Image 1 (cartoon, rainbow, N blue to C red):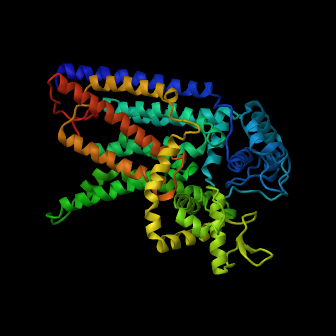
Image 2: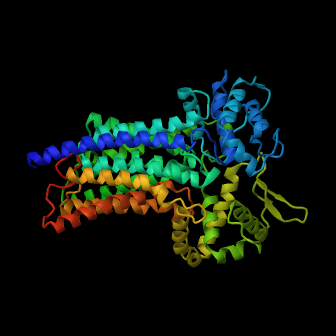
Image 3: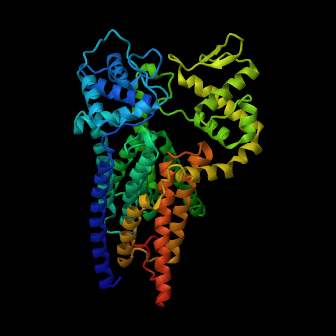
Length: 546
């Protein structure tokens, strides 16, 4: 690489770093301008229980083990967070909840009251059912770091973003192309703030855990980029992977949907391992040390994330023994089948008009129980007419419910494989529709304009710095990497259900577009001026990706 190219790459990296810093600040202040630091979100039960667990941990003595003092839960319920029939306080409708959850000063007063509330230890503590435990940790750390107010959750979100970006920059600071990927990620966060606001209280703010599969994408990309580069396991690189893996494990504990990114890392390890074994077939003794040196980033990631998840599970109180300790999955899978298959709705909704909501799943399970006259599950009771139905009122345990739904779902797949396969085109169509729902137009140009400008500026700097200069080998490697990412990003809508909450999938596809478009523009410009792409390879902080 000539002296001019080296200087351009250095200047380009500096320019991209300045752009990254500017876009990060833009993201933070844009969210504040939208009021996302002064708002809560739905579902109200998840927010209430997570708040109660975090606030209870701040009392002395702390119940620990993801338990919430009943006294704290009661304070929240009395101030508008009542969910169940026997909860104290006003039982509000969706409109009144929206007023409550968008009043930051009121939320702060409720939080302060819950913290100051004397604890009656004679009352049995509560747990959070059918939801992730990690979001209680998220709230607790937010309050400890930034104070006992709702805005702390917003600032903690961007502290996590800053941490993952800093580790990423330290590792890839000499790569214009990979720094451009980070610019895209930050541009997507700006868009996410607009996107969340478009969908109202079901999203509302970026610190809603429903959106965390987008936040978790950058740590796992850090790991996979190292695997792509085939860098040796030096101390600095290993430390960076461990930090990113811990960040990912924490985010995963807040949002189960990000599990597809773990599956992607595992597939990369397995696929790379198989290729290496095939290369070594002619050798009498495979070199295990060399094998581990090549796969260490993804292997380290999987080990750290598994260990973090195990710690969360082991730290949970024994009252969680019959709870999933995460978001229920089979319920969502069955909901996806019912919402995308008219045939399955006709058979399993027992003649009822579909609601395209959780209610459809309950009806389908009730239909199956009635057909088999099965009351063996602890969460099943009989109606006065003798029909068995699911009863999810406390103290029902959601593991028992998940077993029922899993059984129904697997039998549907076995009995109606054609109907299940026919849902695939509908799922794709529905997912695209959710990402740009006509009722809220989250993809309107006014909401995309600033991120597009940011990405365009980053692409120009990256191109000038030689970040899009590739040879055929590097291009093939990049295409394979992108194909794996997009394949696994489609798992949520294709295997679970189409949803506006699939932010990791949205980020992956938008990010791929943001890379491909400027690359094609560079190719057209080079073709127009009669030049050919130089063979140095993608500028990744090493000479080339071979």
